[in-house]
Length: 165
Length: 146
Image 1 (tube, rainbow over the protein chains, first blue to last red):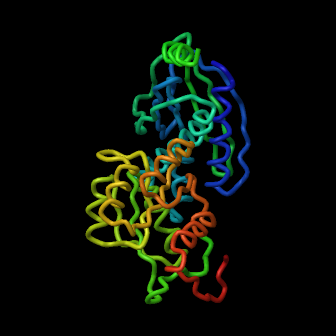
Image 2 (image 1 turned 120 degrees about the vertical axis):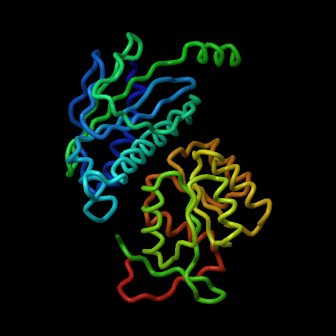
Image 3 (image 1 turned 180 degrees about the horizontal axis):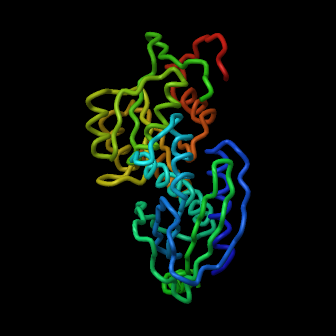
């Protein structure tokens, strides 16, 4: 997976979390994940189709998710509150939207799909051309994990090249 | 949340009324809190473009804050339909997807402005004042933050 694809997502997540949580966000470990995805807590997944395909997962441990959602809501929320899921979805939307905007301005075209809540403990094993990168963001309210698995859509890219030739 | 000098309607000094359109409850709540910090009032909320059209007809808000990616009908189409029926409608697109094509499409189809998520209150405040133009007035408020 090319870093040029990943970097806009890292930049976007850093900006969205820093602004939303009104504190410094530190980008921690980056690790390749070749095994199936193991959910950590409240996880929202957004799929992308188009010139680049794949998915992004934003995953927060349950206690961190409650703290983050409570921060945005301006009041303490119980762990069962639907707004916690909504908050993670909206954060995922903002990260993906900002990253896709940057990539679109570089000439890539996408369709961003609505967020889905991951409920299974374990996801699909990533294939050889969509190995995933896990990025840890350390925030004042806890750790936020972003798992990015993307690949170029070779057919679409070839079609663009043919049109441009 | 930071408090801003209230923006009122010039014609009657009343609070500016907003229609908030977003499929995310979180986003709607967040925008509603910002609007309140501007001295505004939420006239109605909608979770999709179709509902936005009917809520506009019902409440005639001063400003619409409209997301783009939504179920049933996307925000740009809803904005276009509202402006066709109500050319005076002031619609501000609010979306995380802020690439050039989207912005141009929204403006060509009747939106007055575009704000990218995550929304900074101070940015939205300035956009609201700009879009209202002479129809809006900043009231004096002791201790206002902006």
